[in-house]
Length: 122
Image 1 (cartoon, rainbow, N blue to C red):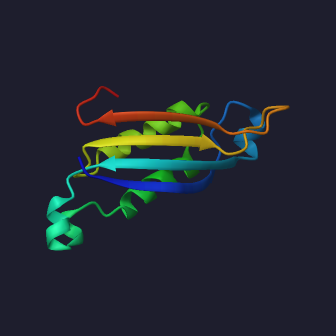
Image 2 (image 1 turned 180 degrees about the vertical axis):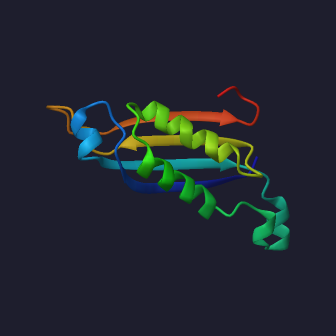
């Protein structure tokens, strides 16, 4: 199956369990793989025959900037659900990363990754 990859989408948000995450916020980074049939657009060269990936970028930005939940698992699943509503996406892989998790003594990143298809229970 054909796919579009979007990598390094980076937005500031307030998802997190700790009080400082909800008040100070933090950076999140998203990598997406969107599976869909690109054959028609490959022949026609028309945007109408493919996914305008600006829609996917807008969904990611809006979800990260407005979500106030406790877990990145929940945030990632919300983004994934919204992306699967875009036609003609058949499957989505999302990797959501907390760029600087505020955990004492931890300087790394924390990520979750989901892959779901149309018709999967979400």
